[in-house]
Amino acid sequence: MDLTTTVLMVLLFVLGNVTEGEVLHYNFYDKSCPQLENIVRAGLVPLFVTDPTSPAALLRLMFHDCQVQGCDASILVDPTEGNVSSEMASVRNFGIRKRELISIVKSMVEAACPQKVSCADILILAAREAVAMSGGPHIEVPLGRKDSFTTPSYQQADAWVPPATTGVDDMLHIFTSKGMTIQESVALIGAHTLGVTHCASILNRLYKAEGDKAHQEMEPGFVLNDPTAFIFDNLYYKNAMGGRGVLRIDAEMVSDPRTAQIVKHFASDRDDFFRAFSSAFFKLSTSGSLNQGVIRKRCNVLD
Ligand code: HEM
Ligand SMILES: *[C@@H]1O[C@H](CO)[C@@H](O)[C@H](O)[C@H]1NC(C)=O
Image 1 (cartoon, helix red, strand yellow):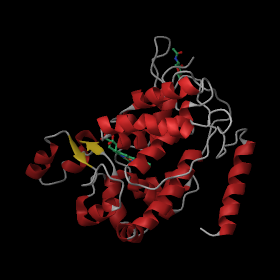
Image 2: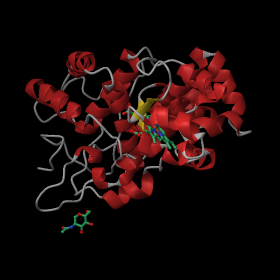
Image 3: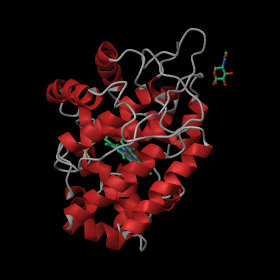
Image 4: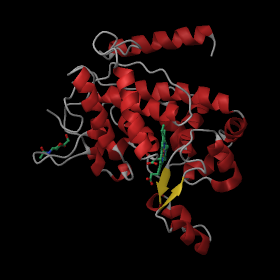
């Protein structure tokens, strides 16, 4: 990206957020919690070692949080006796795992900097560590998000989180409306270089496949999204081009005329994939943040 584009992006970004009443900064916690990024990183290491499937879960968790009224940790709020509604009650959040890890890291952050750091920011930092610690790019993220304070709504999650059966057309619509290019949109789906897909998410595709083979693959209850499911690399694109894309979106991007060349390019140029993924991650994590919000004491309850 050249200098003019960078300056323009930064300007648009700052102005766009000022009108929304909230500004994100790269040094937002420099005074109030200077150790923040180290605490998050050090807190995650043992959690990732204990369960190497955690980075994938946190990356997807961030996507599903940011889809619903911006990145505000609304997906972390548990149902209560007073109101049983939660975003997790939406079928669109099927397979979402490891929300509790953000609460664990939050308690470490609270011990050092009480009531200063939002769960929303911790979730973004955790997702970017998930990418970096898996061998992906190190992504700089501006901070200063606020947490939601109203009862989360599964209807909102139903409305904004894309279904498992989403194709290229809807995917591009979702991401270009956040200001992403087609290249960035294709790069963001490269997140599927990490993690697993449960069989329920691909039953509609399995039934179309030859019966026996499909049933064998169903045995363990899930399939790996790409053969190196713990490593953030560009094998996802090579794999998809080999006809082994797991989800509809993975398979369709290979043949759709709008995305086919980009898939091919990322399959052979890891660095370009990393660059485009980083700017897409930035756009996802800064789009549509809350006007007003709070800093929750605990990530899973509205106090
Ligand atoms: C239209 C866009 C997308 C669709 C339709 C989609 C769909 C899915 C589905 C159905 C699963 C499997 C869930 C399960 O069975 O447990 C999955 C997994 C995953 N998705 Fe996506 N996804 C999309 C975009 C994204 C984006 C933008 C990211 C992150 C930036 C992402 C990251 C992941 C990760 C890391 C996993 C593995 C999760 C785990 O191992 O627990 N996805 N996705
Ligand atoms: C629970 O919260 C949801 C989402 O804000 C709202 O639509 C619903 O009316 C609330 N229900 C009760 C019983 O308060």
